[in-house]
Image 1 (cartoon, rainbow, N blue to C red):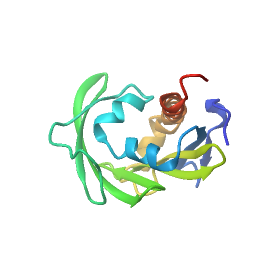
Image 2: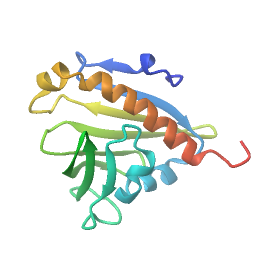
Image 3: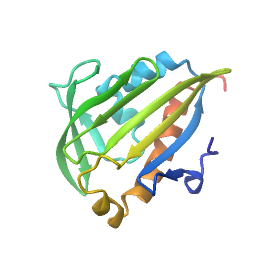
Length: 159
């Protein structure tokens, strides 16, 4: 488990999977419900790029669901994602035209859930380009910030 330091983010599979792990004080189903609601993605996004879900996005994701997001990295753009991994309440992942997968793995532990977020470039059409442009390092920082926001979202008010 990482301690919240981006330098501790695990990179494996020849640098094609970047992952971070964090304890979140909530049960897996509550976290899964948040992740399965595309309207909530801007709430936890640590990259600052996710602006809002598309009004046509489903209220709850399921296997094969398509959902659009308004994004901004320098300039605004729209991205359509497709859910390609779905095992409630332990796994959800989506991809878009680039082919890489954003996934969350949820494992119950004493007092909450171990959440693993992954940026998986193995199926990407241009993994070499992603690596050349520094995407793994940028996404490691974003993963760390997202996991912090996710944990904070579920932190008890008296903590």
